[in-house]
Length: 131
Ligand SMILES: O=c1ccn([C@H]2C[C@H](O)[C@@H](CO)O2)c(=O)[nH]1
Ligand SMILES: [Zn+2]
Image: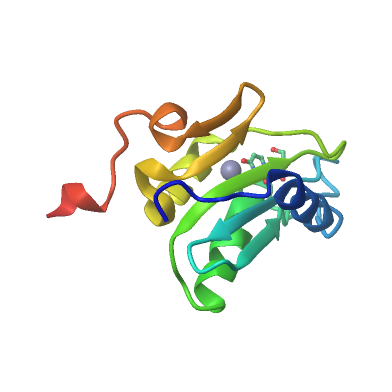
């Protein structure tokens, strides 16, 4: 899929649905994430917090778990929303997490428009560096 057809409004809606499943009693900051997979599947996730705050899982963690558990594949488009349903940038750790499964071509919904991972995580470290 070189220039993937992405239904961004639909992907954002899936992220908003996922956000409603958030377990975030400590921050009060629910997050939902959704991604299109190269076989047409859509995977999603929400943040899951913990009384030991640092153990918290970002929404992207649950998304990549769902990716693996539903058959793997490559991420081609990603959207993340906050509790208002507005576009949210993934944290630094999650950019790395997404890079593993989407690489440079992964398209990310940002407040500045749709951007490739090369803009979201420039000069990324990835599996290619372990060769
Ligand atoms: O990329 C991000 C950034 C933050 N959060 C969550 C973690 C925490 O539960 C809350 C506040 O940081 O937002 C995510 O799920 N993804
Ligand atoms: Zn994160």
